[in-house]
Structure formats: structure tokens, C-alpha cells
Length: 438
Image (cartoon, rainbow, N blue to C red; front, top):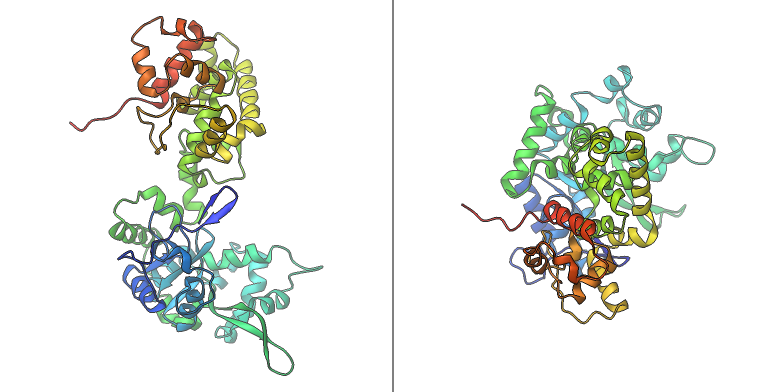
């Protein structure tokens, strides 16, 4: 799902698309073929139930055609494990691939051994005790688990988070969705997830059959499987979907521009959750920051320079550079500027065009900056862009042409030599030019 203007929009197919899945049976066959599949769209394009089904079919309540209802159909079929397996979000794993996931996610540990080695939390232990020993074949509704494990008012906190952790480690799965029953035995209310161990669902022998394998090799099998069916997927994208947090950490440490800057702006949000359209908006947002603060942000996050190195170039102390960095980040977080990357480039561009009564045409932007795009996309102040547009310099292509004249800025109101030099630098940063295959 994708959030557009405050509403969630499904990233599905047309019902007439040849690749569209129309029944629970077809979905089961596809999951069996691939081996595992997230429920909702994520990092890897096309790798989800959502992207293989008709958008209009979701949440209709019709078990015959609603993919949301199919999750219950497939969970109770006994053919698949269902739970929060993909970056804390729901998905399916086939019986054939569950041992590979279990070995990787558990790191070769049964839960008792995990607890003995002090690698499990008390909260996890309280839940898993309900399914331990001769209770391994137990099935419990989530509200029953919450109550029996001592979560809730006056008890343990973070039940949902703890449950997600156990599902991510493949110690628990969702077996079915069932309604509660009253004292008369009649069903009532919404269907509730029923939990059990994968050993109950598939048998201990199958679940632990890959324990002799190095967990890293199991992860590699998962990566290669996704690449087999989705060859355009990058390794980083796959790891962000299928790997545990500890195995994604090294990726986070190697973030490059602009995701390293986005992580600094909003540490609470995963830097990989920002969309290309929001990143396009970030470039414009950077342009709304004071010039010397912009330079520090670009040198620091784009080029990876230290405060000392930037200070030498700017003839400023490292402490002053640090102050500039802080002021630049605060400006980027201010509501009007932040709107560019929070709401995205398209939405803000339309708002500007309407508010300022722009009469010139504009093209729907793509991920990469193109010659016909507004030169606003390279990080210009909106007011500077409007003055350039008045002078006939509207697009990136126009700007490149204008720069053939060293004194091009003289015909643009409010642009002097220093601003012109910063614009030239930004053009080099964000638009290295169209690449041609040799």
C-alpha cells in the first residue's frame, strides 16, 4: 500500500491483467512456486500478494475474491505458515521453505536453548511457556495468550511487539482466524488470530530439518530465491524485506545520500521507507535552506566530508560547521520546508503552481532528473526558480544552455555570482547529465 494525500492506495493490478491472481487456490499455487511471499508491497517491486491481485478486490468481505479473506483460507489450510515474517509485516512461507527460514531466523536455536543462553526476553518466555513441552500442539487465540501470559492492565507491556518478535523468529505462526464463542457456544465478533508453533503445524522433524546448515547459508538461499523470481531486485532490497534487524544494521551504517540525510532529519523513520517522490521533494527542500547551511549539508551527507574538512574549505572552525549543520537540519524540519519531502514533490509542485498561478507547462517527474524537468528539482529556492523562469530559464536543459554564458545570471533578478556558483554546484551534484551506453 502507498499513502497518497493522506489516503492508502493499493498497488494492485487490473482484473484483466494476465498476471492477476483471482482465487485463493491460484494464490496458494503461486506461493508454493516461489516459496514465500509478503502480504503487502514492500522493498522489492512485485514481491507481494498485493501486487499480484486486483486492487478493487480487497476488503470486500467476499471469501471467493477478497485477498484479505484468503489469508485466513490459506492459514487454516495447513499448507503454509502465516505470520509477521517480513520486516514485522505479514506474509506466507510454504512448508518447503519454512525450515530454511526457521534455521536462519532462530539462528539454530530452539526457544529453550535461546532462553538458556540468555538471548530471549522475559516477555518472550512468558508467551512461549504456553506452548512448551506437552503444550507444543496447543492452539490459542491471541486474547487468550495475552491474558494467560500476564500482559495487559497491571501486567507486562508491549504484547503486540513481543508477539511480532516471536513470529519473526519463526517460533509462532498464525494457524487460523476464528470468532469468539459465548456461553451458549454461539460465535460472535470479528475473527481473531489463532496462534500455534510451526512444529504443531508441520511437525518438529520438518521444521528443524535445516538446523545442520549455517544460518548465513539459509539467508543466502532466501536472497537467491527472490532474485530467481524477481531478477531486478537488488540485494539490499531483499535483505531489507527478509533479513532480521541485526543483519540489516550493517546496511544502515553504509547509507549514502540522500537516505543518510533523511535518517538524520527523522531518526524514528526507517530511511528506506521514503519514496522516490519524497526524495525528489527533499532536493527541493534542501534548496530552501540558507546557502552556507546547504553547502555544509551537501558536503557532509553527499560527499561524506568531516566537519574539519568542510571547515578548511569554508575557512570556518569545525564547531561553526557543526552549528551550520544543526541549523540546516532544523530548517529542513520546519513545516513549510518539510512538506516537500513529507508530502512529496508532485503534491507540492502542484500546490506551488496553483498558488503562484504559474502559466508554464510541467512534466510528470520520474525518479531520475531529466532535461525537461523544472530546474527547481536540483534544489533551488522557489523564489529564485520563479525569477529564473521569468528570464526564460525553466528546465534543467534551459539552465545547462544558459550556463554556456559565464555571465548568464545577469539577466536573472536576484541572482548574483555567488548564487550562480551554488546553482552550478547543485547541477553537478544532482544532475550529472544523461548517461549513454558505450
